[in-house]
Length: 160
Image (cartoon, rainbow, N blue to C red; front, top):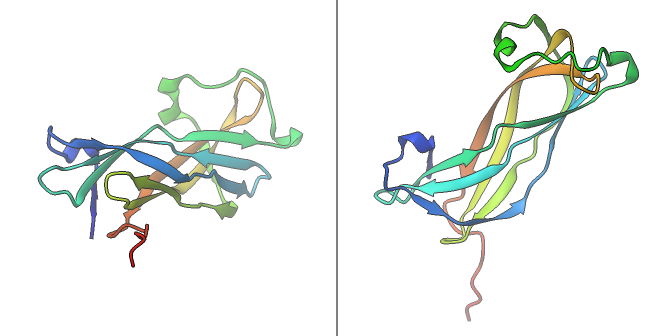
């Protein structure tokens, strides 16, 4: 079984392995307040421990969120909080009515193995009376990655 680690736990001599995108998609969350939140993570790097080639790390960008809200859920434009305010903002949890959380897949070119990465949302909270530059409500999202690396290459060589 492949071990997936935080890149910071890999030795300094880690190898940055090239990969190709097999499939990427957006996560979609229909919320109980009538809003749709779409989220996405982007894989930047796959890293491998040269001492233990079954030990991988990964690096992603912070999640990207987009909000689709009916007019009734919109408010004052340009009322977004400053970055340092986010941990102290009054908010309330919003229930997810329906979700779609597909795996994104990446093929490691060196060995053909496929890494599957899924963004998993554990909680969505709506910030009270704060809105972005377009008047869309602000949401706080708790999330984390789910990663699986297949043991063997999924590609078959053409033998006789």
